Image 1 (spheres, rainbow, N blue to C red):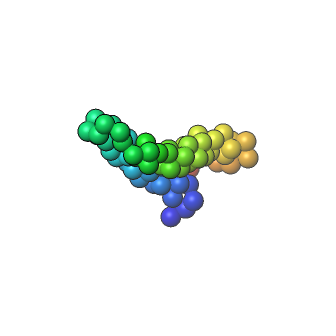
Image 2: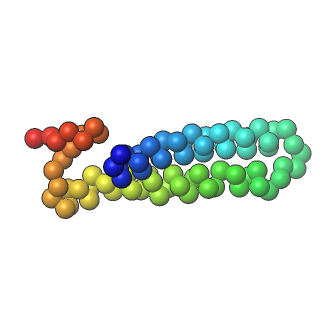
Length: 80
């Protein structure tokens, strides 16, 4: 598995973790009078990882074009 595929898969799985953390946060806010501080901070780690992996995936096509590389589709097939 190449580096770009690994980053893309990580981004997908971290997005699921972020969604679960936000749902847990909403449930905790609704059920407790004074929720613990760590529940509010629960979504920050996945959010930071999503930020970095998302920025990498956003810049990737521009960096490839800037380096003069060949254009490929998602599966790695060279586009003419």
